[in-house]
Length: 310
Image 1: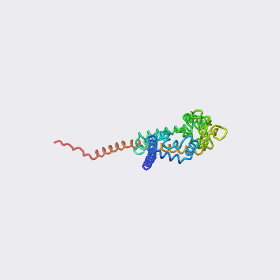
Image 2: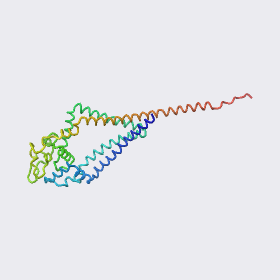
Image 3: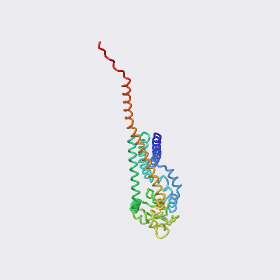
Image 4: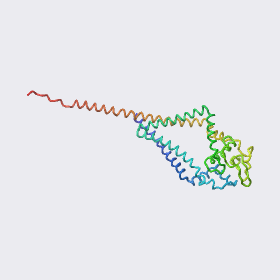
């Protein structure tokens, strides 16, 4: 039983220690993205990504902007939100892992109880979400759609540098789609519909909805919806089918995620039980030791001298 206890503690400590290490790294990356974004790294990401390069080329060939508008320096502010989300989410995971690491390493009962409670809470929440998704998938999908539609309010078109514009432009070019359901979703946003290049165009769809993307200052494809663009093809179905369309893959991912959390909770419970048992056994052993000492003393203690009646 001693070897099993040691292995359990070691495994629990190592897993949570690895999680803490990864979280520290990602928190560092997030903080750097917030405080001092690396312009060179962003430039490298842009040049190494086909979709981002297409957006950059379209911006310059249409005459709507220059290469500098898709440079690391210009887009560095857009990485603030990404860095913030990364830092906050990793900080939460790190705090939970710290409790698990301290509990596994030192058999600290308070840390173990907190770790078990937090991990169980997240596991229960995840299970509830999965059950809701499969019980009423339509309701969940509509809620997700509404959440993404809210981001269209801040859409600024091809020239937009905020994270909402960059995200939508990236998705629409990559998946050859337009809006969440169709081009009419952009009625929620205040992007500039009157654009002047060689001529003045009144756009019905964002320029990135053109298929193929314009390679000159002619933006006719964005002024019509029947042909020459993907105006009637929504992005939600395309992204959903690509990312979550495989039922087998999703089921496997759920099983792995839930399995790991269940194992960690079980290990923490085992360590907590051992720690509690040890705290109970030690006083009992001390009491037994004192009793044995008292018995030995009573045996070896010399008998009182017999008094004489002189």
